[in-house]
Amino acid sequence: MKRYFIKLKAGEQAPLHRVVMRYLKMEKEEALGLITGGSVWNADTNRRITDPEFLVTEETLKINKPLRPARPYYLPEEYVIYEDSSLLAVYKEAGLASHPTPYSRVECLTYGVQNYLEKSGRSGAYQVSVINRLDRPTRGLMLLAKNKECEAALHRLFREKEIAKIYLASTESLESPPASIRIEDTLEWNGKARRAETRVRYLGRCGGRDFFLAFPRTGRTHQVRQHFARYIAPLWGDSRYGRARQSPLGLICISYRFTHPVTGKRIRITLPEALWKEEENGAKTR
Image (cartoon, rainbow, N blue to C red; front, side):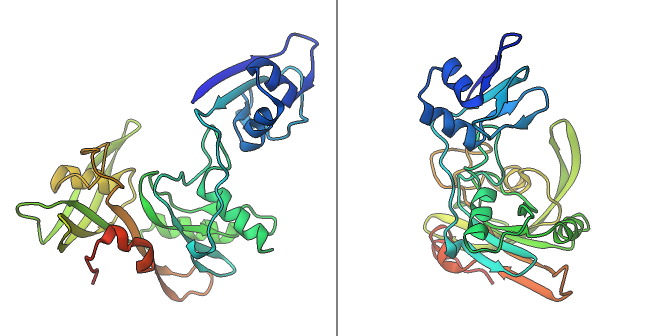
């Protein structure tokens, strides 16, 4: 990503797309793609500007230009695993951002889900909200709320540890994989150290890999990845905490269990085997 700052001369004004074309020396189509894709910001207010006809006057523009054009993400219908009037559970692919990034608002899961709802006539005035996130290389189930009340309720359930998550994790074959282990320590992120707990159960070996179920009891950034690297072995394909020669990352969120915030009924949402069978490689959860 390259970053540019633009400020017009005093008294000058022009439509945003023309400013971008002139200062970045690009054709109109490319400039429109940057603007509508979410790469252009008002640096003074830290807000995106997505209207190509916005009249630029005294604003300082910040343009986060991606190394390649951002591609809008469109959610395949079969990736919607669960949906009701309040929430959705959808499958996120490896390599896809969960939320908008500084250089794009369209190349992410939330854009794909919102587009899916709008095409089906079920979007309403509320912009769908991601409740939890998965790292870009991690794939699996994510929860999204369709309204403000459900969003607040699901965030509360996560804070109170009332939502149980299960991950399928894999490593290279180990000499003595632990049958089960409870990991509790402190993880640091952005200068803050916080307690983290993960419970792990061994499943078995298949295709040169050992498979585990991971049950995170807290939700720290990169928690499962760090705990495996510290206490068991780096996850398969983890370039940050292990080796990068294999891919994709051996970590998939496969299940959620919680009390529905509207109906009050216990609910379990599980990723269909067809979507994670390739990673599972024959190992069976139980």
